Image: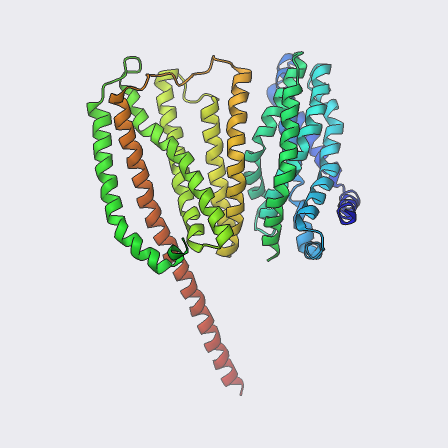
Length: 221
Length: 253
């Protein structure tokens, strides 16, 4: 367990001290959401209608952008080789890296999401639902993303390939995330959608580290 | 199973089976297309357009079936290091992508006269589209590596992750659809399938299967030939290098 927290701490330190890891993702998130009122037009009812979807899609893209750093930097400087020699199984280390990625990317996104919801004119209940849905759903984004990041580590033009591999797998989270927000906004119960989001995060927390660790081992060969 | 891991034995069997497979495909296609296009009754609602179904439905079935084949072959390749299983998965992917694309195109052509639109974000259409994306990502991942052995492993991991995710995507899309637009979207309620339509459909499905097996065998043979070429080329380069090295050493002394 000490190894687990040591890896989390190390990755967090790297993310925050090595040139705005979290800041870039958050800025990207805000800028992307800002593009929609400019592209679609500023009518409040249209924006409120598409708000939840726009915020979720932008959050997916922002999480995706920071994924290529998950293993790539460590692979290049040899840190990943050392980590793989640890007595702890690689799966645990991968899980720790996912947690660090979520803490440094997912949480900041959730922190600015209410503001963006407000900008899109979403109702208060919808914004509450958005924060809850993102809290439960974004861990799955980091975990599924880790599989793609592991597969494309050390691959030419890995970044584009990474998005191509990961985005189709993100679709269920997008669907239930948006349904949760819309249920909350229209006064229906968001509970079933939130439960499914939580289930997907737990499910990926069990399975994704296995696949991601297999991919990382392959990258280290 | 390991008896078939030997490429030479595989080639011998494939070469023996292939002509039969191809002729079976041809016979089934002639029978199925003839029956479906000329001798089956038109639908009372959809008229002649129902005949698109004889291509559309088997293509969609094959799109899903081939992903299953790919996932099983990938698992076998990962677990038992079975080289032919890896090649099978690789060779199957473009065929599956082509069938999925065919089902989307024919579905679109069918949708225009029936639903009045080329595309609906219906659950089935959307999940087939995502399946196509998964195929394309898989094919690109194979191309991204220089070393075929690493590519095989990475692609196998992706195929297995996709096979876990595919049912989840399918269900999420189904639920998403019912949540947002209940019953307004087209339901596939065409004809109750009558045996006059069902039989040609089954023949066509078998024809597609036989076609898949034939093309798969040809593609695996091509992959084997390509690997052989690669090894020969590498050997040639190594030989030239050693000859150059020897010549240089001779010049220096």
